[in-house]
Length: 316
Image 1 (tube, rainbow, N blue to C red):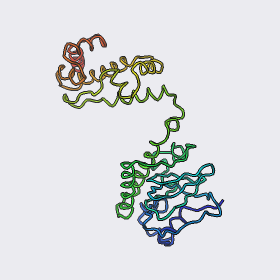
Image 2: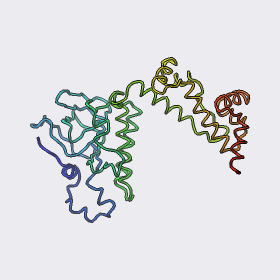
Image 3: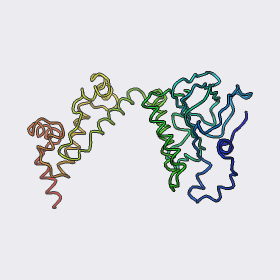
Image 4: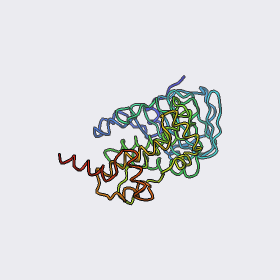
């Protein structure tokens, strides 16, 4: 297999200036240049390509392509025809060949593994689902998603030409955003290979529950209050959600919701000067009496007694 280095690609697609000139760059940028670049098809000389003699060349860089013209993606086991805006991810390990059909539009970026080193990006590149999946990472985009991806690439092009000292940090953020856009289009099995369906549902429920809090002011009210509201939001039957949560946590949906509401109520009684009626309202209770009964059943204290007790303990 032939190999195309990252540096050779960038030289071939750009001006071809000697890499030795990078020594003249400011220190911060000097360490980044050569690890990332972005290109626009309209700025590259395009010629009709025949099928190459080596069909699946190995490349020494990662590549994210946003294609808006007709083309073809060839894999050893499959050929994918591209006829609408599409996002493609390739890696040094990907046996892949791309053949344009006619004039191309779109953008692509290339980067080395060093560019997204864990110490810089917080991710382990080859552990990301987009690069581990056996699925071919070729994703047709809806019109809104295509506009979003195009905007990211346009930001990349603008920033890489700027004199901003931290522009490569921005490039990492843009690159990771593209990766996450791709990963959101992967199958659920690929994104959660080690999670059972019950574990995934539980995780989604807990995340949704936690997103109701914290409450910032008395006008801020929780949006979801009952087990059925959570089930509807997760697009499952309430009985199924209850069964899942009982199996994974040992508690019912209502018990988990109540426990989290009590936790927030304690915090509000302890750390704010909101009236008990205001706290009851923002936690979704129809009146003070209902909240007081609920709080006492969960804690053995009335809301007022709990607040007085904690206030007095702060002075002892």
